[in-house]
Length: 554
Ligand code: DON
Image (cartoon, rainbow, N blue to C red; front, top):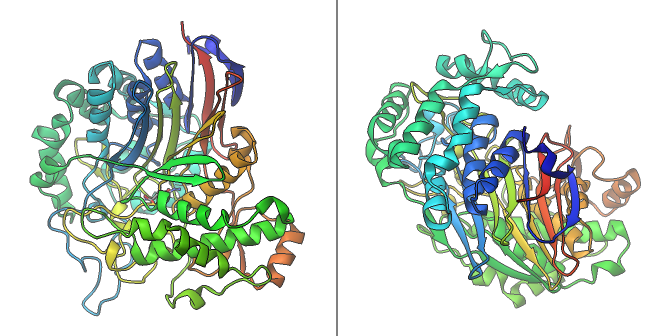
């Protein structure tokens, strides 16, 4: 708390950029504080990102964790190096194409979602170490210190914690080691009660001493594998030992003079958003009335998500036709197929069937330091509290990211997304993600943004980019009413208040099926640097409990 006096403004911030200014936006005040502490100690944005990642693993256990994965998009100011650190989970070597199907070939309900069989091999510990070792200034011990303290001291249960726990409590009750940490006598803990994670603190301490080897090898690895196997999972020590992050070149897109740097496969985010923006680039959106503009954006989303289903998967396993999907002529053709008066039925594009999607969680944070180094990171354990399974004696809550594979061709996952061969399960493969940490740059502005939200991540970031294009600040991007189309199911999803009643009437008259989600969605954390005016703005989504700060460093 002692650095609070440094905050210029809480939630949305605005200060002069002279001479040493930094900004952090995360989904939890304690994680923002961990990042500030590390910058205060002389760390750079990459050290802060590592500390924030570890802190979120402790204080936002429903969203991400060292038992999960993610993507860190980074920009190094000294040489303008931009790279995506791919810490996505990998399928265990004993996984098979049909591992979640019964003998008749039907998916077994819950198998890819609940318990250790749903868990991919985590990438976050390796990602944290990679950030610090290759880009940071501090030691792993220093950057892990805030998270270790938070795990020992405990964090207070919030309304969001309670809401997300309500969604997963039945699964968590089945695993006593998880219930002991995250429930109170098998009930949702009261607001403000403390969640202490002694085992997790111990595992993080082991990592601080031995590096990521402390996680992927030795006692922690052995305990995780034993516990996973005893509960029906298929991890082997070798899976952990062989896990490596991969540095990949980001996807770069130009949209109306904005250079957009976003994630490449195994996330679909950069390509789907890029394709949608290339389609939208064929229209002068400003000339249309607001609802026609929305219709065009929805139709662009529909087309881009269709190609996601057909072509995208782990590039180490399948050939992803990146150039073709972003090709000018190809996207021009897609733009021409949009009828301004009518919705195009998704089945006219192809004939795939699917079901509805469910509630979700994940996390995003954005950081810029005084040197202009920046990080946009989206991290996940997939559904709230991941697989619901803590590996005994380690405090590590495992993800259920295996559900992001297409467990059966053209069958919907938890987000209603369908896929095909490109995203089929294979040993060692990374499941296709929608996470979309993104940088935006024009002559005078830089944007850093991203959000959780499953399949809707990409459309949320897309709407944020279009708002940036209009010249609006991050406070506006994070607050925008949200709507979405993902090809299948063939419906426009919108959050409460996402479409006005007159917009709904017009879209229906064009043939769109509308579906209001029963709540608002997303938790965007964003920063904007106004280069010429020397101003930094930062904003945290009003739907969440996060904190964005712009502050001076001594
Ligand atoms: O990687 C993905 O696309 C998903 N596992 C992300 C899940 C997510 O965002 C859930 N959040 N609300």
